[in-house]
Amino acid sequence: MKYFITGGAGFIGSNLCDRILKNGHEVVVFDNFSTGLNDFLEISRKDKKFTLIKGDLLDTEQLNNAIIGSDFVFHLAANADVRFGTDHPSKDLQQNTIATFNILEAMRVNGIKKIAFSSTGSVYGEASVIPTPEDAPFPIQTSLYGASKMACEGLIEAYCEGFGFQSWIFRFVSILGERYTHGHVFDFYRQLLADPTELKVLGDGHQKKSYLYVQDCIDAILCAITHSNANVNIFNLGTDEYCEVNDSISWICEHIGVKPKRDYTGGERGWIGDNPFIFLDCSKIRSLGWKPKYSIKEGIIKTMEYLEKNQWVFEKR
Amino acid sequence: MKYFITGGAGFIGSNLCDRILKNGHEVVVFDNFSTGLNDFLEISRKDKKFTLIKGDLLDTEQLNNAIIGSDFVFHLAANADVRFGTDHPSKDLQQNTIATFNILEAMRVNGIKKIAFSSTGSVYGEASVIPTPEDAPFPIQTSLYGASKMACEGLIEAYCEGFGFQSWIFRFVSILGERYTHGHVFDFYRQLLADPTELKVLGDGHQKKSYLYVQDCIDAILCAITHSNANVNIFNLGTDEYCEVNDSISWICEHIGVKPKRDYTGGERGWIGDNPFIFLDCSKIRSLGWKPKYSIKEGIIKTMEYLEKNQWVFEKR
Image (cartoon, rainbow over all chains, first blue to last red; front, side, top):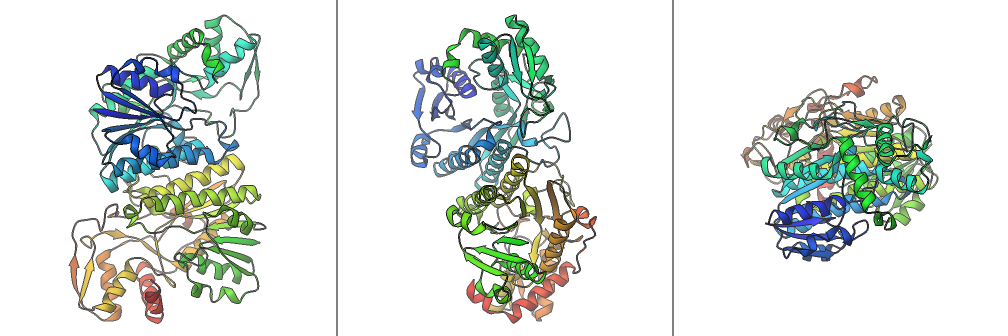
């Protein structure tokens, strides 16, 4: 099998790439390196079955050429920045919705019909049902990011119905682990490196969030693709637990042995569109036999260990 | 109040325009006349408070200039063609999703914060709950049209959260009545004008559909805008009944006194992505005091009467 991974030089994409190559398959990584890093492909690069194409999903000609001959698409490339969506309102539309349309068209034109897509628990907005199942009540979007990912899901589903595609759509909680360079653990650790006596925390610290360790995430993706065979396969991916931002801070501080003064910006939301409680019902993916090997706390510690050993990532961000 | 109506030269838009002018307000119609017709603005045109701008929502500069000074946007412009979505996959993305983003941006830049939007019952895909309420289970899209309208809804909702907009989102069943020039009554009547002895019917005729008369639709829209004041207001709009395509054919044939042989293409769906059962739960809009004045049958008869008196519309299609 030849897999085409968009965003394959990114955090999750590069880990997935390593894994798929290890499983003996061919991989083409397509990445514009807007957040992806060459260093993340250090292992993959050594494999003869690996091809890297530096390209942009908005360049349809380049994309159409690059995708020829692939059997299966992992579409992970995205603007994954939830928080600053309102600073540049067109970014999620361009890099998520339109980019996804371009991938679907490139697949259609080239007769490629299988796609796995990294969506997000943010599509549930502020869910009325918690833990939130895949068939939760029709959500109201609260961020441009969530809105764009829901738009991508809809496009993919319509291609399944209209053009006989098959899809696996994964609604992730926040993912943590090796090559993580974006999000709260990264931000907190960077702050504490600069000044271990003070930590600025968005909101009141009581926001309840879920996290999943990247290797668990990849296990789940591969499990679903192997064992779920509907036309449209939608799965929440997370752990069966959540933590408060304050818990996470305590684990981070304990791990590096600091006791900063916590300076809260206040309010139950860290920013406009921040969801004060994300907790997904993952019984559907668990029914396929998958379960996470790591708890949220263990995932955070593994992330800290990675960041400690790879402080160069702070230079590149 | 000055209302900006996109698609204001279209079927629903022009009827809305007439009504709003009659209520004493100013109206700017913005329409690219891809399906809108100058003839539909015959009444509005006589009003001093009416302005017509021929323009395209994909021309952002023109749009930004046209919208200046408006207080409220009715965004009705769309590619409303559900059936042929797969013939031109980018059309719904361009004319619905991106056009809606452009309107939202034009509003944001100009400090306009209220928008009413014509969505569709198609966003529910093949609903698992019938009659389908606004908070039905998270749908799976079955058409590029439905997917694009869901994308528009998400964008509008995100602008409400991120930029303090207020929105009224209407999920229509099929609308019928004066100036209707698109859909099954139009198609059947055109066929019967050409040959009253035979009628080609897509599917098996047992598809269950809902229809609403255009003036009832406009009453509902104005009722919701007046009486529902949340940040995001979502309403299904339809009657409390549905009919089979076969019922509809019988009413049409009875009305014009013909008995054609019905030639069914077969299958429970008329085309790929056709929904064999659309029936919306409209108790939310009814709780505001609105109810339709006309039944589905009456709406179809009124539509036939319009088409009989205005056969020129067949020339223009």
